[in-house]
Image (cartoon, rainbow, N blue to C red):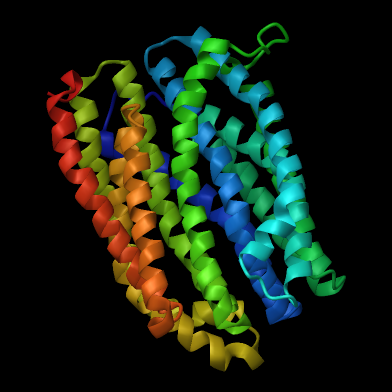
Length: 445
């Protein structure tokens, strides 16, 4: 359903828009979490370590794709808010066709470089073959990942955050069912987990494209309209490349952190993989609220609604804080049962205590990224991607350095303390800049 955010209750718009995004992103995370749970239980710790050490590499590529789509979404939201339907369709066509070229290049490079990247991360020899196999199959599905992100970004730019979620939810169930069939029953190990994920991604991307073609005339592209607009592509790449780089900083940093965790052994790798999954589930709703703020601010900036743009930040931060209260309580109460989901009974005595201690601290630390994500969503909606990149580089650099100095004493717990240090430095960069930026933007006066 198309939603015009230039009128009506700000908090209602942000919450109703963000909730489907939260559900959708959680379903997307379920792709990987289900892989980890089923692989850990039915294929063993070694296979779980292979999937875990592959994920940061995979996420670099995926977040690079979503970065380009976010940059395009800001432009489409602005066009929609300003009532420029022709430009909206041109941007949608440009994003789709560029994706064909972009994702093909990613597939080729990723397939060639996978072994070298994993060896550079000091992946243990007994894990390396499974990790290479898993990554290569995942990368073959990258065009479908781009397709889903591009089409869902187009729908979200016109206020429809629900429709992509329905397809993603169905794909999530499909992924879980295929995992059971391929891994638990067919005993295909990481091969089965990767195949299940790719098939599910293909389903969600193709169904999103079909829905737009059949049900959303505003985004329906005729054969004549399927062409790349060079000026819009330039703008998309200008903003999208910055956002892609910013989006990729996190997994690059996590890749470096993974490289420092790997020498601790297979058990530490498996435990870190499990808590990283929980981190993803905690962070993703915060990022979804941020995307809601981005769309809201961009639409109202296009419509030149000065007061609504200003109120978008404060209201969005309140929503972020409310979410943190909920996730903090949930993690504190359920951290031990959650850890047991990821490991078999014979490995639980070694892995579960590591994860429980980590999550006990992170439940409180999740407050920091709630605020950093909210501020970044506001700046993206204002079409200011540079500060989001700079502050992210500061944050991830501090995290990597922190783990480097602490990992010898704290093990995987070093990642938690390094994270809160990084987020603190990020806020110290973003908050003063906001007040400087406010003085120089007419729409914020």
